Amino acid sequence: MRDIHARLKQRHHLGQFERQRPGLAFFTVPREYLRGLLLDLRDKEGFSHLVLLTAVDWMEEGLFQLTYMLNNRAEDVTFGIRVMLDRDEAEGDSIHDLWPTAETYQRELKEMFGINFPGSPRIDDEFILEGWTDLPPYRRDFDSLAYSQQTYAERPGRVTHDPREHMKQKLYPDGV
Amino acid sequence: MKDVDDKFLKNIDKEFPLREELRPRTVTTPDGQEIEIEPLKDYFCEAAPKVHPKAYIPIVENFYNWARANSLWILGFGTGCGAIEMRPLMTPRFDAYRYGIQWRPTPRQANLLMISGYLSVKTLKRAVRAYEQMQGPKYVVGLGSCTINGGMYWDSYNTIKKLDQYLPVDLYIAGCMPRPEALLAGFMDLKKLIKAGKCEGANKYAENFAFYKENQKSVIKDWDMPDYNW
Ligand code: SF4
Image 1 (spheres, rainbow over the protein chains, first blue to last red):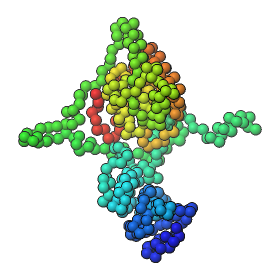
Image 2: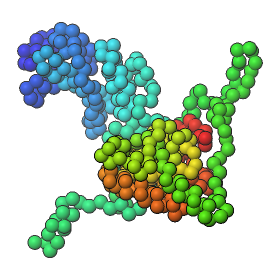
Image 3: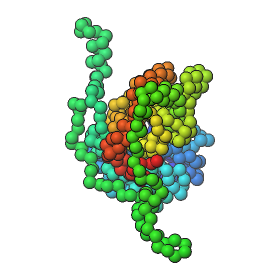
């Protein structure tokens, strides 16, 4: 793993190399170098499989983090490549021509986080939600509980117990 | 509930536009005529459901109910986790067929709609459609706490929490998820209710049609079907 990283480092701007366990490491790259790096990994280093593409909402920092997980089956190595995007005009670069599966991930990210990927096929179509009119639901400023209270009728009488207190009451009713 | 949140306000100004292909418009036919079409009206009957009156003589109605109770055909439409619990019922282990309960693949051939768990808004739309296409007398059973009060999806942005707001429910079976034994007990209860003439869900739906439609439309923003899908 380290030798792949060392080789890549000569050709690319790689951020801090964070090794999580044998065979899994993460690093951050600037957005403009992402495509070159992915091409290199796919064609020269044998990372033929895009495991997933997902996002994290860093609301306080005003950033979205995209994580591209790539896997090299022959060597059993997985790299997570992080790209930080501006949260206000969230727009990533489509990689559907490198891995066709990315198209589906990108549609999901568009719908759930509102991150646009111009040029990706069917990016503006609905993915899972139907007739959604509010904020993209995975953004952290979308309050799921409040939305559901304001949208869906409730049956009164629902109670919530703090598990710790509840079990204490049940097991030791006298407080001993 | 005590943890009501009022800082976040949902966006209520935005309407979801009707799909392009469903809008009323003028089209030119291949032979050059101009015709007006309105897809949602042209292909469907507009008549609202009607209340089915009881038989005039009670003993006849009782006989009908006895017959109805012994002819339950479930629509094989699984919505949530609970759908898994219906599978063992169809197999020798629990064998619901011995009680005269069987599954059918299409709404036209079924008279019992089991909502087997949480319903997302998207699935609710299909469930409403399926329910309306079923022949009366028809019954709805809600399985699991999700259909009763939202269950563990009580704070989800996309699942309904109280099924009887949208469809007339005759019986709930509690549990998360209810075991097949509970379902069998539920079927027996449903039979008792039908025999007692208490399962009037289809009539309730017809009587309170406007109420149900309003509730359905308040959550299904993308309403792309006629008001009654018969
Ligand atoms: S009640 Fe439980 S088992 Fe049933 S749909 Fe809800 S979460 Fe799933």
